[in-house]
Length: 282
Image (cartoon, rainbow, N blue to C red; front, side, top):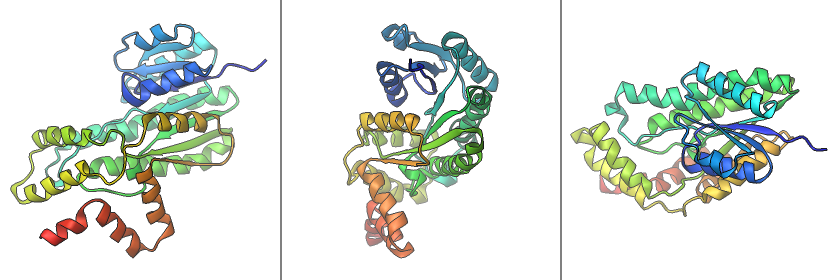
């Protein structure tokens, strides 16, 4: 008889995390769906399959408590999806220290915290899988997202290094690199960020241009379901595969980064991010 596997997923209160929790539960997995403030909605949909648990990625004690609650309920832990993350559109020079620290605390240190708390449980199970949700900007940087880009590129390096190290423990580590999902949300995000981190006068014209380039993104939005399916495939994948590139924009980023010269890569990214057009205006 096939053993039912158990997965812990962070950031399940909404969006990608919530959809991912549903997908695993619908496909027969037991799910520890974590969020800062559980509301019972997911557990209500799948009462036998989903356990909601409070978890703050910045609080190792809450991580261990959530994992233990899942182990007590389902018998063990087989996989982890590090999905929780935050972003901010801003000019680097004017980005508050508090915002920088918050992004790294969630995206980088939070991912590390979850992995460190989960590893003893995975090893006790004889191995398992860790899936880290990164971003297309982990491959190629874009303007106005410098802190988010830095955090995701840190996650990329961490993930690759751990994929070698944890092979010794029969733990596979995977990296999901999604493209922009619902890209028009950048408008609202950009406006909110301009209030949280006022744009210096000398940057205003460029900020407006770069933000408009995000709005006029030349690629279709990456479907959330395709990212969910990539996460699901990665959690089951026993091969040495590390990266799952998802979305037409990230496919182009990857092509430019790894299949062209440095000059061609930079020229291509400048065109895609509106930098070439800005040079024409300057």
